[in-house]
Amino acid sequence: MNVKLIAIAGPPSAGKTTVVKQIIRSLPDPKKAAYLKIDVVQAWEDEEIAAEFGIPTKKVYSGDMCPDHMGIMVIRDAMEWAEKKNGADYLLYESAGLCLRCTPYTKNSLGLCVISAVSGTHAPLKMAPMIALADVAVVTKIDLVSQAEKEVFRERIKEVAPDIDIIETNAVQGTGMRYLTKVIADMPPAPSEKDMLRGVPPLGVCTICIGKKEIGWQEHFGVIRQIDAPDSIYRGD
Amino acid sequence: MSSSRTEIESLTILPGTTRDGKKEGFDEIVIRPGDTFSIVGPTGSGKTAFINDIEVFAQGDTVTNRRILINGSEPGEALVRDPSKKPIAMITQNTKCLADLIVSEFLEMHIRSRKLDGQGIMEKTISVANEFTGEKISPHMRMSALSGGQTRSLFIADAIVISNTPIILLDEVENAGIFKDRVIEVLREEKKAIIFVTHDPYVALLTGTRIVMGNGAVTKILTPGRKEEETLAEIARMDAKITHLRERIRAGDLLSGLEGVEA
Image 1 (cartoon, one colour):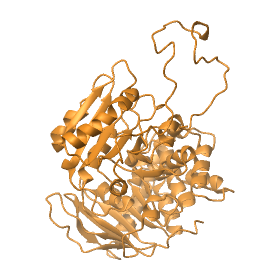
Image 2 (cartoon, rainbow over the protein chains, first blue to last red):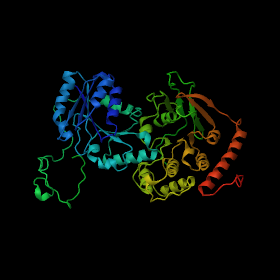
Image 3 (tube, helix red, strand yellow):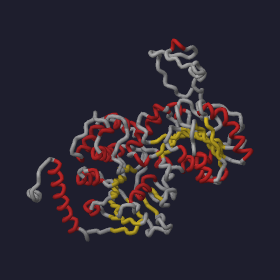
Image 4 (tube, each protein chain N blue to C red):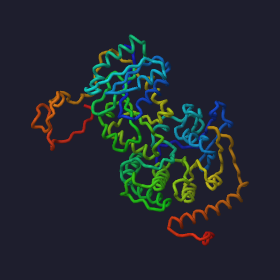
C-alpha cells in the first residue's frame, strides 16, 4: 500500500469539510487525492468535493448502524478503491462526527480532530476520547474569538492531550494551514492494508443493541450500569 | 514577565496584491516598539484583513498575499504558534465572549497558559479593565454575561497585563462604548506598538502614522507630523464634549442646549 490515510473526525459543523478542502488544495497534486464520507442518513460533501476538485469521491450511509462502526468495516476496501482503482496517493476519510466516543483513527492514519473555537471552554473535555487519540487538533473559526479565549481553549485541549499538535485556523481563508500541510508532507504512507484502531471502541453488543426496548437495568443483561456506578473518564485506552 | 520571548525590534509588512491582482503601492511598512498606527478607509476596503495578516504572520498564504517579518526575517514556528511566545494580541470587533466560565476562572486559566506567577495578576487585570468601562466587572461574573464593552475592556486589559505583548491590534476600539481616551493613555504608558483600525477621527489623528486602505490594498501612508496639530486639538475638544454628553445621556439626564458641556 502506498496511500497516505488521513482520518478527519470532529463534531457536526466544526468545519471538517472546509478543512478537507484546504488539505486537498494544499497537496502537491490535488488530483492524487480520494475522499470518503461516512454519514448516517444524508450527506452531500462527496458531490461537492468531486465537483470542486474532480477527484474520486464516495459516501457510505450507516443507517441504523453506528457510523464509526461502518467506517471500521469499509476503510480497508476504501483504501483499495482509492489506490488500486484510482491511483490516489491520499485517502481522506471524514467521519459523521456524532457521538465523539468512538474514534475513527487507525494506527496507520494521520488522525485529525477538528474542533471549533466557538464551541465553548468545556468542549475539549466533553470530546476527550476523540482528542486524546488524534495526532493533530485543528481548531477552526479562530477569527471569531479573542487572543485570551484562544489561549484558554488551547489550554483545555492540552489538559486532555498534553502532547497533541494544535493548529489554529480560519479554515475558510486557510490561515495557519501551512503547518498542517507540512505534517501531511512528512507523514508516511500506510505500510499495508492491515491496520488497527488506536483505541478500544466502546462495548457495542448489548441487549439494547439487539433491539430490546425495556428501560431499567433489571430488564437487561451484559454490560449494565446503575445510577450510582463510579464515573470514569475515557482517555482512549 | 515571559523571559523566553523574542525581543521585538521591528515588524515588517511586505506588500501583497490589490483585489485586481496588482502589487500594492508600497515597499515595506516597519513597525517598532512605541509606534502608533491607524488603519482607515471605507468599510470593505480591507482594514480588518490588514491586521489579520499581521496577527497570523501571513507568509503569502492569505487572500492578500502579504508577508510579515519579525526583526527582518520570517518568524520562527514557535513564535507564531505558541501563544506564550506570540508577540501580538488582537482585540477583535467580536465582543461576545464564548467562554462558559466566570471571570476569575477564565483569567486564571489564561495566566496558567502563559506560565505566569499568578500573584496579583488577576486583580490587576480586572482593575485595569475597570478603568475602561462604566459598569464595573467583578471576578465572579460569567464571561458570557458581560456586555460588549465590558468584554472588550477585559480583553484589552488582558492583552496589557497577562499577554503583555509588545504589539497590540485593536479593531474599532471606539465601537464598544468604552473610555477610549483612557485605553489610549494606558497603552501609551506601556510603550506598546499599537495599531488601530478606526473610523474615529480623534483616534486616527492621535496616531503617528495613518494607513489608508482601498480595494483591499494600502493606497496611502501618511505621517502628518505636526501638520495636523491644530486640527487634533480642535477634535480633542469636540470629542470631550461628545463624551460629556454621552455620559449625561447614559446617566439619564434631560439635555436642554449644551449647558455644562464646555466644562
